[in-house]
Amino acid sequence: MFFYNKDSGAAASGTLNTEGNYSHLKDLGEFGKWTNIVPLDGARLFFYNSDLKAAAVGRIEADGEFTHLKDFPNGQFGQWSSIVPLEAGLLFFYDFESRAAASGMMNADDGYTHLKSFPGGQFGQYSHIVGLLGGRLFFYNHDSQTGASGKLSADGDYFHLKHFADQQLRQWTHVSPVGGGRLFFYDSLLRAAASGKVGADGEYTSLKNFPSGQFGQWTNITTVDRSRLFFYRESNNAGLSAAASGEVEADGEYHNLKDFSAGQFAAWTMIVG
Image (cartoon, rainbow, N blue to C red; front, top):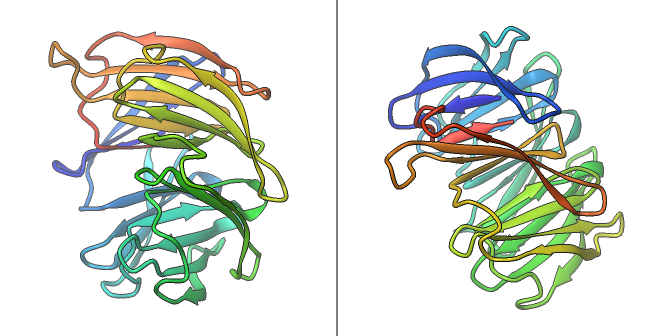
């Protein structure tokens, strides 16, 4: 896991095991200013700055140390609000305002190859985009409670699969992938949640609903090793950080794994599994 604070530039690494226990590995010092950080294959991370349109790639080693791999200069990338990782280094870029998108590939040698550009207006306006196995993408709009599914091919082309009608998906503040095409939805206001699944054909199936108050109040939810979730809140009522871990089963049921002591974690704005 990689922890980052966009205000201070501080970063750290750690691990979450199958029982949900957390082990701190390294305090990594100060990083540059990044607006998006997403995981790639091989423990690599892709860093992006939307103001400079610049990027970088690095790797978290087994002992938690960070190895810088490559910088991409200012202006090499477009203006993007969301960056979604898929398998084998494939990336999907999307901008909420213009509704434009692009695809690219982060190669094994850490070079970047642009694949496709999709013009403004081709996509709907989505607050959340989640990558699933098989190159599938799940799109969700928090305000309209609508969604869609699609697929990115190995050459970066996009194929629309399904559209989900108004209010079919309810209102959620977080959407996280939890393996096998499954999704975990969470609302920070009601502290309610749900799980669902996107099939190979892009169709969505609801699995489980969890009532208001079942979950704590979280600002970050991070997927770790596909099925486990790490929940984090920078400051609780006592001014201390809070965190927990849990797991979503194949049938969509949720199991809490661990609640961590208040203040155990530092102040982080981004957490990457």
